[in-house]
Image (tube, rainbow, N blue to C red; front, side, top):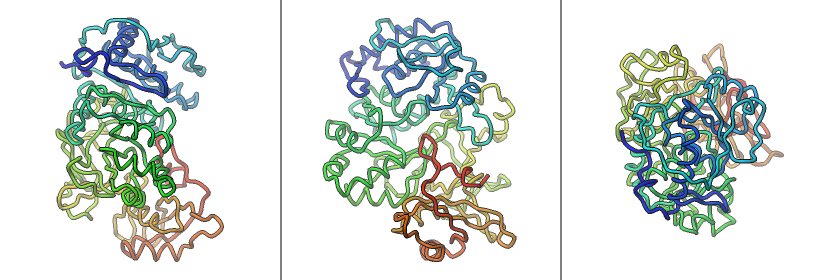
Length: 481
């Protein structure tokens, strides 16, 4: 058993740890506040955390981990029905929240503990084992009610240490981001990651390109974001030389939670001389692959497997895809200490998620380049299109569409076709709503960049694309699934 955050007890007490807007805590202050909260929950089995972008959320999660109590982060934007399901499913003993935070009806039924970010207490001696639950994070629920993925302490430690290896991440790095704290990206990577390294995190509260520029100019070395954030940065760069200069000075720009369009990669690189790197993970697996800091930041790829992660691609019948040719599509399966231990109270769903030899079935489809780089082409259920005898990933068609000057946003799905099996459907938000590009123009554009069989056969023009809180396009709302 090893401590998750050595800097809380072994590092300089006056070292900056957390900053949310104008509020901040040093490592000594964080240890004292977490110790005070941990003393109040040490008899609990699980506690819910009202995960607003605030100091109190970070203190609450660190306190739960210090006390050996599993934390259940709650999305403050969730509706009452979803919150009711999560609370009924996870049965937390209490909810931790910032003083004054208004809680909706399902959460108000729980015993409440207000988190004092400036409380004073001693951190308890850690007694939890590496396999004990650390977090219960609920999936997005695209195929039914959300399921609680139980993440053990070893998964947090191994994934964060593997990223430290890949990114040369140390306590000297200063991370800035504006990600929500109810999910893996913002909470595990964006808050617990810096704390494990012994460095500071500066949370923007609400993401803005101006906030990013300010923090990077003020000493931040790393930026974490999702594609919608980097798209906003790419849009702002031409008119903001200070933003370009700030990004150029960053050590590492990281995008995750969804694929970053190649077009935005190239716009950012052209304006700043810096390339955004991507990584790939899931709620159930934490991080699986990443472009390394000392590797090639190849647009459209998520790098190579992280240390300790076994990754394979398999055909529909389970046979391995052995060709690293950048074309042969298979489902990603992974195995390693970064994986969750199961879905809370769902042994049936847990068993179905794993193969007989212990690999997790991700449902993500990918190809591998000859040097082992992984390129994700989409989800099996929404992004794999079987048309004319070909397996086609929606992602590469979306990237091609986004290279057309008349397309601002794009999504690609499939729909039944009597002749082809499925036909490719493009959904776009045009750059100029008054003069959207037509189907023939876009089909020719895609066919010229990829292959004729990958061209869209149907076009829908929309004002906006439906997205979730992490910026992912919700394709089921477009009519597929």
